Length: 240
Image (cartoon, rainbow, N blue to C red; front, side):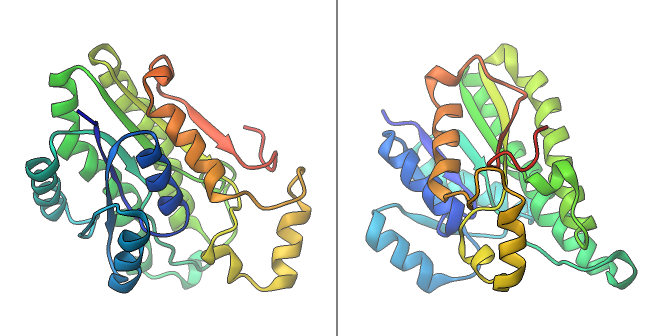
């Protein structure tokens, strides 16, 4: 029986590439999304991957959604916490809602999905959790104290939970992408994007599929000896 995987934010950008890669690996994938229903329908039409809509930052909604997925598809053995938002601004202009919403979704979402699935993974003796961090959680970024704090928190969350899961066959790892060629990065003004690329030693943006290949390895049986690690996929921009 195919293992069931949930990919949050799984219908666009990096999440879409991850969902497709895990399906190619033989997993039963369910892609979470929050807002864009038309994009989610198009994603399913093209990939055949079902979607489920809920806010990963809502604890009760997450518990209910995971229970419904398990009821329909089987117990969830793989979780990829990819969903994330930005509310950028320098601290003296950032209000509490900008701070709180990013923490609620980006970091709180990791807790919520883990809380909904970790106990079952432990009981079954096998599980894979991959949390998508960021180069900006490692190095910081001007105007992103909320985002950088949440992503840095993901890296600490990963190491702590990995220690709880290791003896039960549950691995917990993170991937810290650099600048990836997605719709979000494409919206950056060309002069700014040129400066970003100039700081990447390999001389280009990353591709979403390159992040997906890292996730595919970490969620495989062959990745079972890797836990508590952060895989930096950033073209050498930050060697951490």
